[in-house]
Image (cartoon, rainbow, N blue to C red; front, side):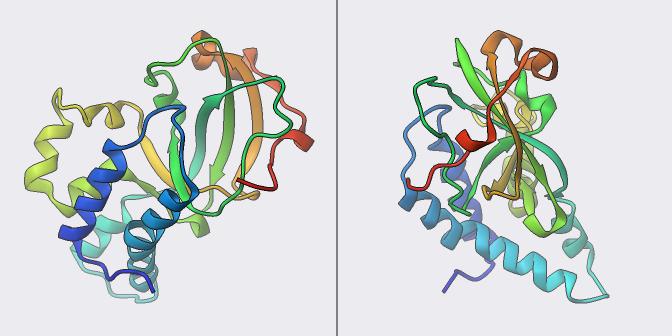
Length: 198
């Protein structure tokens, strides 16, 4: 059973979600499942309950404005010897909008750009907008300045589940050419997209 929608508790979980991730770092299946249960599913369930009602409060509308639809991108290490690259776990993971691609730091060499698309039924969430929604008096000023978490603003981070339906393409590209991936990226054969195990 997932947690109830408690903005104070959920903002703590979201702060941990943001602070513990590193690009290309080792991720554990259990970590994603934990955050799905204690963070993303309570948010998603609350959004779904709002959408079921025709009358909505200003607070409801503010939360709905945290939802995102459109193109999204993930960047991960590329190893040409790998047989496949993504396990479609179905749990929420971090994505960036195209504007956020150029803000990704600490990467070099060849990378894999995962091109996704967030549909309304995916309930993709702008993480920083959600944090500010939950605790505006604390997080609003921090994200507008030089605080360590402001990098997620520059990356335009969005959380969305990784599924086979959410991915529309994968491309190998030099990290220095991320801004121009549409022209420089080499499409990865579709049979190499998905792994069958973690």
